[in-house]
Structure formats: structure tokens, C-alpha cells
Length: 491
Image (cartoon, rainbow, N blue to C red):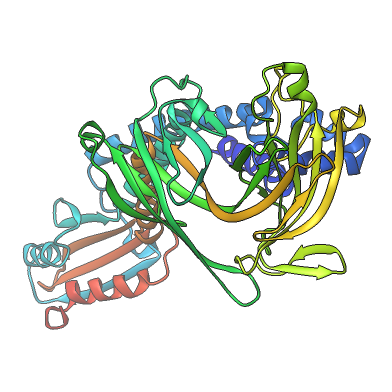
């Protein structure tokens, strides 16, 4: 038990960096910033795994040692518990006056009558009668609750471990007003974190279509609630191509076929139309990333290929990228644009238009929210225009190309979570609470009664009591029982 308590303390101590320091699994950019600010100290913490605490070998070692210690503690206690269940109550001690609680009286009854009265009073107790004695005990459920608590804790740890093997979690951005997502494979996700035994080839199939999205805000810009009207197909409805309606809200996920679909947040998608010198048009909208969660000022890059160009070299020299800042509710300081509120109230964009090689054809992955800065540094991508645009306004480039700011739409951030052990986790968590409650409220206590025939024909009845653990109020319970045994009128 001491070993288990020591390991439990070490586990809590080892988990503290996970709560106090940024973690790579949650915010890698914040970790990079933290390390850069701390120099060699930050590098040391990075090497020791303090920014991915729960995946480090030293945390897993403490976890496994605690698990082993818990098993080693429970096995002998369980065996002892079953032996105690079969054992009879302790025989009545010779000298009951030495008990912490004691009462006696001389009664005009026979010893058999006194024993019968004691058995009646102690009905419901575990009882053993001897020659003019009664031994009784109660509160055996205390150890039962203790064992239930520890076995449930063990089950909870096992459930978590199995969950980490067979669960998966992914995030995806879907456009509102018609955007769709199907859980058909890991390539449909923007981010995907599989369990150790998940390869992404056997995901639960379902499809979702996002309809109208709405958001409510306080006057200071703090969000009150997000709501998305969606349709989904899963199970039989997927096979029959039937759509089911659902209102998706924060903390009110869609539960379907063992998966949970959460609404995490939202942002905006500006739509631009580029009219090229030959008159051809290209219209495109791509989500921009909020850089201020309070005002939803967003940055991004919307990229265009020139139409009708088959030569790859010519195409790479004439690609267009519209980058900049989107302000849902604009706030202008001279020509500097910012946002003062997260809702769409006459949105504006401050755009930088680049022309040249975007670097999207070199076979390497590239962020959809930015351009490749190396292309700018090498002079292969050049800024050719800058302007603040309201809805419907446009900017003309030096070659006659025009870029028009058409509209702004909502996008929603969704998370799909699959955990086949969540039901077991809930069950064990409830058992932990119940077991702990029983263990803390039920107390072991014992009562003995002895009836001795005196020379004058009367009977000396003694009652002794002992609480196995300190319990406030046992004195009152013992006094009540003793009165009932010693004085029938007060029983």
C-alpha cells in the first residue's frame, strides 16, 4: 500500500508539466515559441519530453508500476476479504468492561430471555450465539466498497489503455451552406490521430452535410453559442441514402454508430473572383485562419492558376495569390485595417496580391493558409498590388488582371471522436464514486452481549461495543442498542 501511494504521488507529480507547460499534441506552435524564449533551458525540457509528457517513457513507467502495484495490492486483499466473509463474528471477550463502549444492568429475566431480546434488537447484524452470549458485527460493506473502488480504478486504467489502442480522433474544416464530409478515410481529415491499432482503413462510415450556421455574441465579442443545422447519413440511412436532420451545437455532439461529431468552432471563407487579361474568370473561396479569437480577424491565402495555359513554365510564372487580413467588422486606423467584432458587419479585406511561382508544383506539402516565403525571398513570387477592399470592390494589376472581393461565408471546425471503451469508462467511473462513497460512510463495528445468572436469581446483562475504525456517532448508536437490550420498555 505504501508503494502504491508513493507511485500515485509520483504520477501526480509527473503529470504536472502536462498541465503547466504547452504540449506538442495540443499546440506545437506554442511549444516552439516557449522553447525559443527559454534558450538552452527550453531545449533541455524538449529533450526530456516535458512538452509531450503523456507519451514519454518515464511517465509510462510510473503508470505501469502503479498498475502492477495496484494488482499486487488487490489480490491478497481480495483473498482476505473472502476469508472474512466466511468467518464467524469474534467470540465474546471475557471482560466486556474493558471495551471502549460498555453498559450493564441486572434484570429480572432468565439468561435465555436476555439473549433472545439481544438477538431481536440486533436483527440484521451478522450474528453468532454462544452459551448465554451474542456476538454481532456490522459494516462489512466498508471493505466491499473499498475493493469495488480499487477494482473499478483498475478497470478504468485498463479501459483507458484499450481506448488508446482502438480509438481515433480527427479534425476537419467544412464549409457551411452545403459543405459535406464523409468518414471514409484518413485523407478526408485535416488532422488525424489514430490509436495504436488503428490504420485508418476501417473507420465507421457516415456522411455529414453542413447547412446554415449561426453564432451569438455578447456586446464585448465573447461568443454565447454556435449552432449548425446539419444532415447526416449512417448505418441503414447511409445504405438507403436517407438524410437525417440534427442541430449540432458546442458540447452537444452528434452520436452515431459509435462515433461522436463535435462542433469546435468556426471562421470565415472570403470568396474572390480573378478576371484575367483574356477575359476568363476564376472564382474561388478557401477558408482563412482566425488570428484573433475575440474578433475573428483572419489571415489566409487564396491561390489561382491562370486559365488556358498548358505550358508548365508559363503557368508557374503567372499564378496569383490573394493574401491578407479579413476583418468581419472593420476598424480602420488610416489605411491599417483591423477587426473590432467577430460577426459579419460590412466585412472588408486588406489584400496583398502576389504573382509568379507559388511553389505548389514541387511535390512538397504547403499550407493552404499562407504562401511559400522562400519563393518570395528568391524573387520567383512578387507582390504586385495592395489595397483594402469592401464587398464588391476590386483591384486592378499592372497587366490588366482584376481581383474582386465577392462575399464571405462561414466554415465550421468539426471533430470526429471514436472510443469503443467510453461506455466502460463511464461504468467504472460510477463504480469508483459508489465504492468510495460506501467506503467512507460505512464503518465496521461490533457488539457483544453476555447474560450471567446471579445468586439472587436475577440476570446480569453486559453489553460491550467496539468500532473497528474511528466513527463519530457510534457512541450514540451503541447507547441506543444497549438501552434496547437492557431495558425492554425503551427498546
